[in-house]
Image (cartoon, rainbow, N blue to C red; front, side):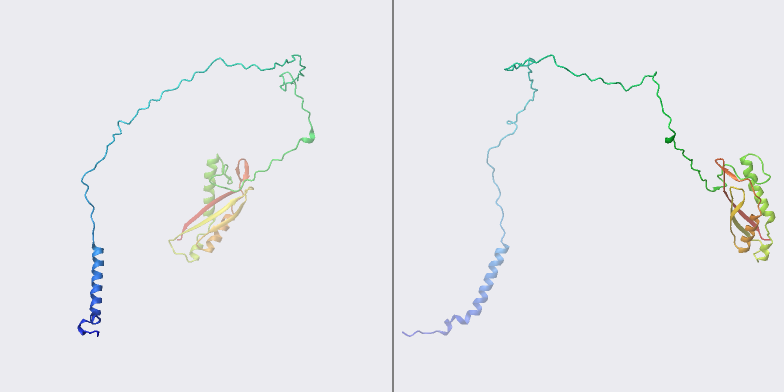
Length: 244
């Protein structure tokens, strides 16, 4: 029997369209599954047995427990009774008292070998500022108590310097007329009363040299004392003058 072929019934001609339709259908089904929503069913009624806790509660009362103690202790009698000999020789130990009586004399043996002479170290007092020195240096001619000697010392120093300082050299140095010149001098009156360690600060070298020269002319004084010992005393002197 001969098989007849119909060109219109060939499915190969529609393969592309069928593939496209299958793909669209698959995508549609996937989309529907993804967008599908499910909802919980509402609870209509609860059934069961309710138990109240109040009925099961029990109150426990705690009372102290009294324990009876038997005052009569039970005596245990050993099976064998051993006789102990009462006559036992005990060696007595005599403990001598170490306390001394008031009437007992204490004898001390003098040994010259154990005596060591200790030399007292000399306390070295450093230089003391003039404002805190106990006993100020005494300028020749000053008398009175420590307060009066302090005031006299400052007054005599000022007069001594102003009388001997050459103020005319300011004009020679060409300093401006009417200007005020300040010189600061620091020196020490040592433990012998001599003037040492002179230092000066001035706006001009010549003024500094003049201040040192005048301080060197100060006389020897009675030294200042700290704790009764002669010490060096530091003194600061400002020199101020106006250029004419």
